Image (tube, rainbow, N blue to C red):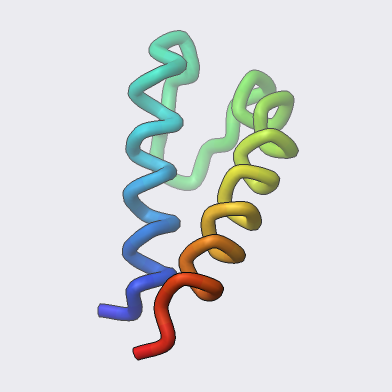
Length: 57
């Protein structure tokens, strides 16, 4: 699996566990998840940047 993709999936799991009141249902995006989406995307972008600058394999 692509390292970046795996990292994003791991972050999504961590993100959801840290915010227990965000109920995740298949094909349903809650209002709370939308509110937190910007912070989540920012974290993912930073992590991708750090990962790509550290690893070149």
